[in-house]
Image (cartoon, rainbow, N blue to C red):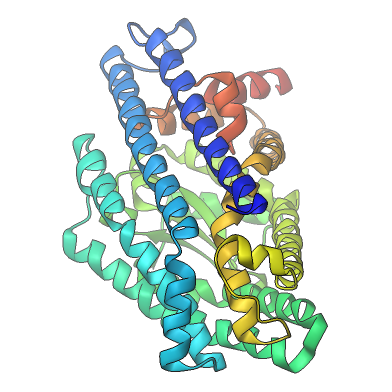
Length: 420
C-alpha cells in the first residue's frame, strides 16, 4: 500500500477512535449523574423528565456510535477496495469522458453513498425519535422529502457541477478560482431565493395571526431596527415535536420564522426573548461572519482539489490512473477522493469553529438580555426548550467543548446572571 494511502487510513481510524472515545467519555459522565437530578436543575425539571433526557441522550449516543462505525467502514471500503477506480474506468469506457458524463459519474456516486445511509436515517426517525415521542412524520412524508431532495439535486446541483467541470477546460490552471467564485455566487443566490422557492416545497409557511404576540414581535423588530417583511409560522410539527426559531433571506426578502411547536411551548415574553436572541445574531453580524468563513472554506477546498489533481502520487495511492492536464476526466477523481477524505481532516478543526460559534451564542444572549431589560425571560425559555427537547443537561466538558456549537444550559444561565 502506498505511503499516502497508509497515512489516510491512519487518519480515518484515528478519527473513528477519537469519536468513540469521546462518546464513551460522555456516556460515563451522563450515567454518573443519572440517579437523581443535579442540584443546579432541581428547580427546573421533574425527576421523571430528567431520567427520560438521560435515556434519550444515551440512546442517541449508542446509535451514533453504530452509525459512525458504519460510516468509517464504508469510507475505508470505498477508498481502499479499488471499487472507485474500477467504476470510473467502466463508466468512462461505456459513456465517454464528456463534461456531462463526468458530472453524471459524480452524481451517481453521491446517490449510491446516500442510499447506503438511508437505513440509519429511517431508524433514527421512526424508531429512536418515535420511542421518545418526538416523531410526528409519516413514511409518505419521509419518502417525499428524500425524493424532493433528489429532484432538487438533479435540477439544480447537477447543472452546477457540470458548469464547474466546464470551467476546468475554459480557464485552465486558474479553474479553481473561477469555480469557487461560481459556487459561492450560487450559494448566495440560494440564500436569497430559498425562503420563497425551496423551503415551501418542504414546509407550509403562514403569517403569524393578528394579535398580541404578532404586535409584540413586530414591536421588537422595530425597536431593534431589524428589517423584516414578515413573521411566519412553519409547520414543524408535521415532522417532529422539536422546536426552533430562525430568520432567513436577505434584504427585502428577510423574514422571521417560528416553529408552531415553539409557539405552543413558550409564553409571549419567552418568545420575544428567543426572537431577540436571533436578532442579536443579525445585529452582531454573526451570520455574515459565518458566511465569510464558508466562503473561505470553498476557496480552500477548490484550491486543495486543484493541487491534488496535479499530483500523480495522490491518484496512484487509491488505484486511479493519472491522466494529467486540465480536463474533467482528470479532476473528477480528485474531487471524489477529496470529498471522501475532507471530513477526516475537518473533524480535527471543528472544535475551533465551535468555540467561535459558542462565543456568538453568548453575544446573542447578552443582546437579548439588554434588549429585554432583564434575563429571566430568556432563562425560562432556554430551560423549557432544554426540557421539551430532552437535551443532555450533564455533558462531559471535553465532549461539549469538542462538539457543541452552543454553550450548555448551565453555562448560558451563568453568563446571563453575571451580565445582569
